[in-house]
Image (cartoon, rainbow, N blue to C red; front, side, top):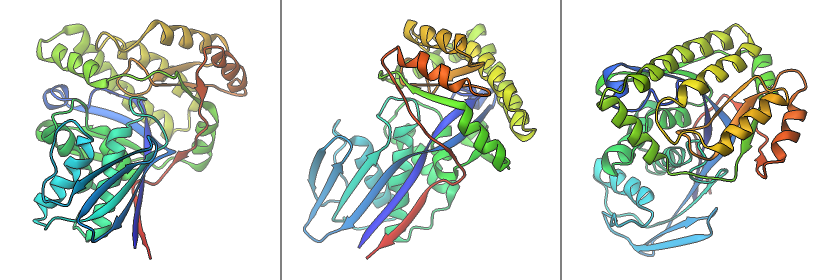
Length: 341
């Protein structure tokens, strides 16, 4: 038997950063994101050889451990091992023996929520295999708890919920970890046109998002007025983006992205780089009307809204910077799990 799962990577269209504590705990956060046809995948093959084998297929790496109830957290694929540890602990299970294969369509540090999406995917596979009583909110919250509480990894809350629910969602974040996911009923023609008009560009750079996020958190704790005000503006941007999507006012999306990018850069140092500024200016000159870096900033993907047929000129301009344009579609479904014999 093979247990399979997949969950989509996301683009944060508006409000990014307002899902990060302590800002979301004090002021509340608002995010609008959408999932893409880029995925994280997981396959689990139960065995009886007394081993746990992790195969990271996109990195061509294998790790082998003796079957036990708690795997060591020692700096070696801790994220994957922490998932297993919580599943065993929370559901009071005996040690398991299995092979697990993972693959992600985008590299770590690219700003598409790869790590959190992979966590959701693996939890989904375990849930399918073991028949765990986990709903969508349960899976997303467990993924968040493993990353932020068990491993103390800096970051927000949106990625886990985006991967689990899928589609276009307006998310609200409150004190004490409360999250409400509001799915948006986006018209099919809007979905198709938006997929057509957004150009996703990988700069061939990556970053450690935790450094930027920790600085962002420090700015809130120390009551940095400029940073906090920028985050409030990004919350407003999320509401504006929701209205534009529901009203099918697509060109306004480009303007909202442009406004949001200016405020995002004010949240913390390191969000933008000279490369990003040059790429952004070149894309606007070629016909894009707005864009933003995906994720915390500092590296990874950047995307642009390109109305009419300007995407071709924008792609030509971006190709001069040595990165790679990545084709994708927006999707409406989240985590999927199934078994095959």
